[in-house]
Length: 223
Ligand code: DX5
Ligand code: ZN
Picture 1 (cartoon, rainbow, N blue to C red):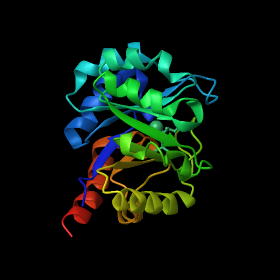
Picture 2 (spheres, protein in one colour):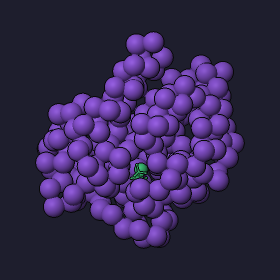
Picture 3 (cartoon, rainbow, N blue to C red):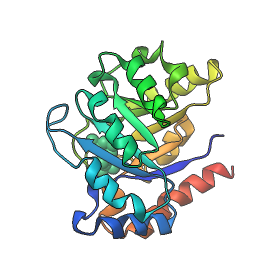
Picture 4 (cartoon, helix red, strand yellow):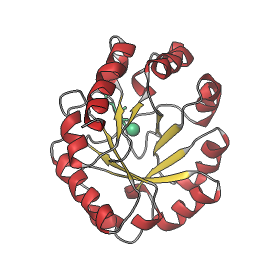
């Protein structure tokens, strides 16, 4: 079984205390920090960009998993690489030349990921799967935290893990949106190994929430 990783999304953090929020989930056992970048065009919401990310890069040693919900990502990928991204994830729906974008990310020494909206079929990955380090299965329509999990994502994760296994690929499969302690075990069983959660981590007692997610992940890993 691949290592299971929890990636709290700081979209739901208190931005007035962003550095402290990151340190808190780090100390509680988070594995990655998920950075949701929204441009008001690919999605209707706006969040933050590379300058904000750069400010908090020094708050933790954890990898930064940067989810670009933006049009024309090639223009900004070098900025996010320079600001300390570890993995850069672009949306297949926003990339006319996805293969070239993946090459750009790798040329900057970063891991490359592709995200699929709920309505986007896995087929778009057929000719680039070997080039990717990670695929993000969106289990909500991107743009906002706190939305309900779309159940068809489970089937999509299962099919993707099967596709990756049949090709012998060492692929991280991330699930993003509406992930909670109620659907986590099913997502692990389906073959996902990176779990993004925003509202279910930061709304309430963040350290306790991280520990609740990690307890389910640890139990699955020790089975
Ligand atoms: C949605 C973002 C998610 C979001 C997840 O557009 O990509 O990362 O913050 O938040 P929750 O866990 O609240 O659905
Ligand atoms: Zn995200």
